[in-house]
Image: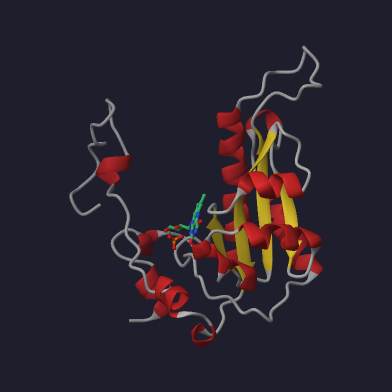
Length: 214
Ligand SMILES: Cc1cc2nc3c(=O)[nH]c(=O)nc-3n(C[C@H](O)[C@H](O)[C@H](O)COP(=O)(O)O)c2cc1C
């Protein structure tokens, strides 16, 4: 079974357009690969041009290249599970959005809605990860790190939150990483069925177009 088929399980995924079909989240990156600045800018453009409520674009990204000060702030705060594979990525982007009211906001400004901001940040990040994959790169998002400590180290205003990281790079040699990280590459990818996530006329009642195999 080829790597691509293994990671795009049936049924359903084979109908998707690229780069959705072959996307998955690898954990073995080439620790020597660096991303040229213009490619990093293209990834950021993908997020920049995502739609957002009121076109408010409530997303910010820290660009953490290996060896940068921002990368140095992040790495000590990664969870144990993420500490082996994340630093090997060519690039880590840290995604932040506004959660609480800006204390300096004018009373005429619309109140902040953290749920919508999170929705928009997630969407911009999805565009970015798919752009990465269309460029022959791989992205693996992660949230297991001490976000408060990282936000403090990067001087993020208290009414914004660092939400997640996106590790991006090219795939590396599995023999260079601990067995634990090698095994992550072969986890079976599984999903809830459509009956569990797509409803028809009532909450919890599956959309009638769903057959058992979906
Ligand atoms: C917001 C978010 C947070 C995640 N956090 C972690 C993480 O901390 N560590 C990790 O190894 N993977 C993390 N993942 C990756 C998911 O585990 C992975 O996307 C999921 O298992 C589905 O696998 P796939 O991306 O290969 O389809 C995260 C993904 C998302 C979208």
